Length: 434
Image 1 (cartoon, rainbow, N blue to C red):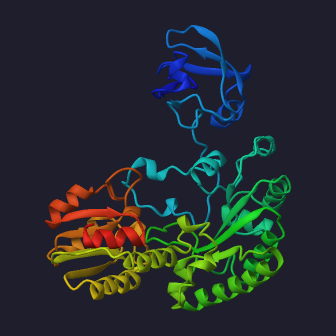
Image 2 (cartoon, rainbow, N blue to C red):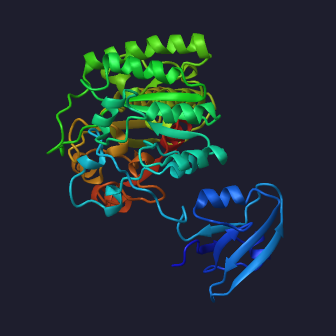
Image 3 (cartoon, rainbow, N blue to C red):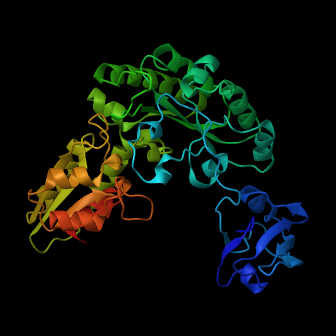
């Protein structure tokens, strides 16, 4: 495969109009080499373009183009980032990939730490493998927002937690990006005895001092049963969850007063472990980090109760089952009961699936595996349809983390299995088959 090779030319695009084909390669734009997807997107923003192309026959030609500002050529490259994703240089003490069992899909063991994926796909990155010239390039190209795995702003502690001697300059890098107008989202994986307590307060204080930080999530360490050879870190228990929430809520008030935003958001797991009520949806300020499990329950709860007021009909008797993780079980059961109250012909059985594959400390639905679901539901009353969360599936597939497919689950359980989004409207519609 040639560097910058085009995989697809979209119908009706500029690329099709000028005769580009799959197998051609874009070498330069306006006489500047296209090194990666950021270069391509940045250079393509101009109205007048000189495109240097190597055809699939090997001929190098120049093509002049006039187009709208930011209008794309309409191509897909054989490699999404053009030069391949950058791997992680850290050995984080909390890394989930280091806690995977052997024998899973090879792609699951790849640790990406690519700032370009942060911009394009929302991935969180540590910035430890980014040279200063790349930071300058992100600023020049206005790559924003950037999602950063911060964990701690204490330089020595960050080096210890990431097992990387180059990890300590995080505040300098965040400040440089922020001072140049780059928006930032930050994440803190809370590890008891390491970055909690006073260290957490220091980190929140440092992050509040940045001018262009949009949100900070605090999530608990996820510990599987495969931590052999890794350092011992206590789990987040009820007492620790309460302590963390008290710190977060203290700094929310300070941020709201000083910056007009709560800024700091604890994941749903902390509230569930602390046995505290999930805050109302408006306190999550448009859910900036819902993909990290921050406000997921509040959002789904609001959507579900709004959906109940839509007046959906259920004309015939219906029996549905739902498989979910330990952490979400009580919430899913509560809204299922509300649906049963509203619809006399509806029966919903909600099943709590214990994560035997990764270990019982992993309680979120998104990390459940097919074998655990099948084994724990075999012989149970499942009704006409079993609902599972799409978060259990690999992107754009019907395959769960242990390579079990939805179709295989259906054969084993003898019931139709339907994967749905974590959305209150979709949940009610799936219960009613609307």
